Image (cartoon, rainbow, N blue to C red; front, side, top):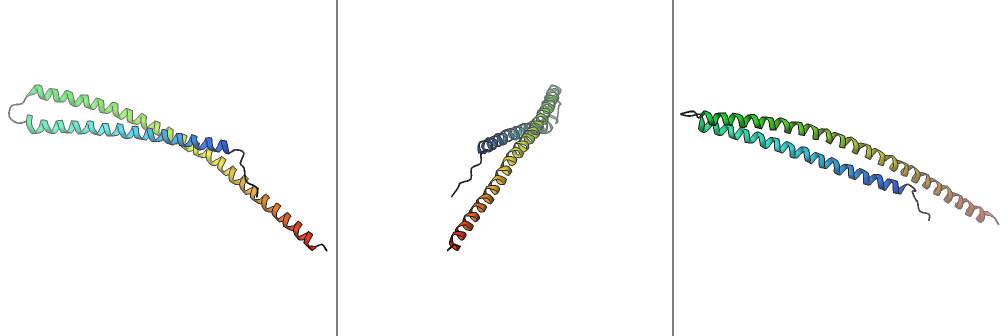
Length: 146
């Protein structure tokens, strides 16, 4: 029996590899966004903990203005760091969206070749069925002759 051969199998394999690479890039970029978000959350927790500590211990009795001033500078510095971190997160999210678009394009390219392969396979099957029917007709004709 004849075997189906798709002459663009190498292209299909390449497109599958390309799509997997785009999936890895997307995963890496998503992991970066998650890490940056986690770092921002940790910064927020540190500021909240420092503020809670200030409220609990330094606002009773005599006020230590130097400590309060230092705490205010710390809070402002952390806010600036948080704003920078938020910018990095926004850039990383843009990179994720770009990677997602590239993955969609790679998947579309792979699907085009797969669709072509399916069509050619179907054509090959139809051709095989026609050949088989022709052979059966020929055998029937030979058996019908005396």
